[in-house]
Image (cartoon, rainbow, N blue to C red; front, side, top):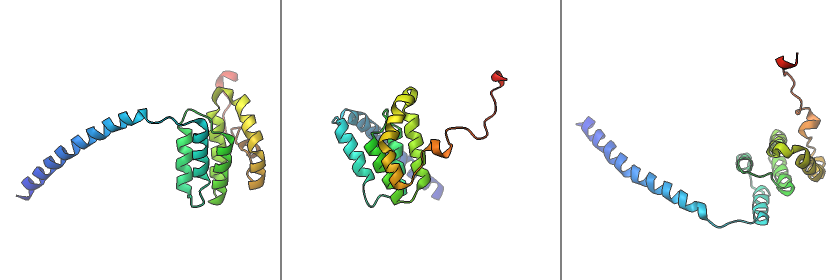
Length: 151
């Protein structure tokens, strides 16, 4: 008796959940054509997000992960706000990793964009006592093996 009742309940739940999943997938596709945000509004939104006084480490990581998932290099004012947020939650390692992520986001133009970013955020780095990955020696692999084709 209990077995047949649980089987019937499972079938009812399956039928009730499938249409909801289909509806949500359609609404996500339609949401793609939403309002377009200007570059200034985007920068201000992320700067305000990182400047919140009640932000915690998880939210900082979430904001940084969202930025890293986009096809852009964050503006230096966003990077400065993120570094201040890292200092507020006392997470030095996260600050250094975010600088590394910004360097990776520069892609093939790393020699043009990354020096500009460092130049712009250097006063903030000095103020907060944060060293760049290059100053820490993270730009050179510590235990890398020699390439067999170069021997």
